[in-house]
Amino acid sequence: MIKFGEGNLRIPKWSKRVFMVAGGCTPFRKYYPEYKLEELVMMAYKMMLEDNDLKLSPKEIKDSIQFAVYGEFADHFQDQLLCEAKIHDYLGLDPLYNVGIKTGGATGGTSVLMGAQAIASGYANCCLVAGWERMDEVDTRTGNFYISTAACKDFETRMGRIYSSYYAPMANRFAQMYNLSDEVRAKIAVKNRHYATMNPNAQQPGDHTIEEVLASRMSAYPLRFLECCAMTAGAAAVLLCDEEMAYKLTDKPVEVFICGGSHTLRVADRRPMDIPLLPNEKPGQYDALLKENPRWPGFESFLAARFAAYLVYRMAGIHDPLEELDLVELHDAFTISDVQTYGDIGLRPYGQEIDYVESGDCYHTNPHTGQAGRCPANLSGGLLGTMHAVGATGIWQSAECLWQVQQKYDYFHGAAKWWKRAGKKKPKNWQSLQVKDPKQALWVSHAGVGSHVTVGILRKAW
Image (cartoon, rainbow, N blue to C red; front, side, top):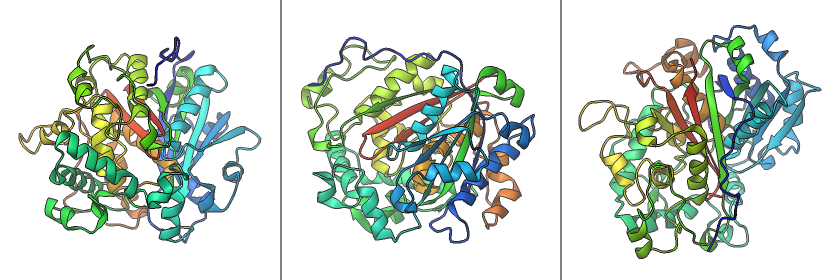
């Protein structure tokens, strides 16, 4: 059994406050034959500099950056080692220092964490964080294999060579433990893909029924194709600053809190441990659950996500996430990973995750009452509906949270220029998914089968 040592549970503290002021992204697609990778990153970078109502010119902001963090999941796709050096040069930021980050699906979130640490330490007062993936550089079968090697190649990779085969046993185990139905998972796919229809950058938007989701082709039992994200090409960027610089740049800075957790790649070999309790949980709360299933986290939960949430809630002073958060962006690469995370981050106690969906709390508008959901999830369309350009994903999620807290959802999702840029027509039934007066948002950036996870919180600071 894993036991924490003295000091392991120290809550991180920034030496300086950290703020996010701007974000940008490309439209997300399966293929981008007309653009080089450098051009895609430039597209996101320019959007970040030019379209976030910043008080300095793009040239002045560029001249203020001292450090850059770049996220890329796999060199395999670009067939280019040290790709961050090419990007940095193309953006015109040499000889400023830059680092490349690779932590699987959590690469984007880890990149934000590393950029935040640079600001918090005083190394920089203005830091670019950008990420990308060119998953269109190889055929789909090869791409699936590349992604599958982000599980332990000695064990899991040999079993499936496709990522849905890793999450399929988790879905079966969760259903066995907590009576999760196929219909509940399908509701998540329906919701997130529908929200993606309001996002001009979405790769896989669609209005589906539960029946259509359940009738779609099987990927790995019980996960259907409409319950799985697709491989994506695209890029995203955000700008991090210290307090003084943030207020020079914007009247709507958003404070950043972010922490991470990890766990072994070998899912079947994960050692049990006591559940780290979140601030709103009480000693003994899970005694009955652990008596029935003493091997927590097992196949049902992600220790890395729980550990990251344990730290960041205390770092940010969050006591009850469901009551204090206004929205969340979760890592819905598969419908089951979405469900599992509800318990990990405390939107529901472990064993009651299904109620987050069935109660309507996860919706922009509660389908049962017609009122706003208490804490809506994945209003961006999530990974299922909008994107999973892996190195960009956690960065893009943070930008979506930023725009919600700044109350800019309508501009970044509704303005004609973004639909035109994406080569799409704005739907006649487009509706605003802006949360009313949000103060705090959370996003989860998740790797592999739960090997690395970051949980970040953005808080209104004006």
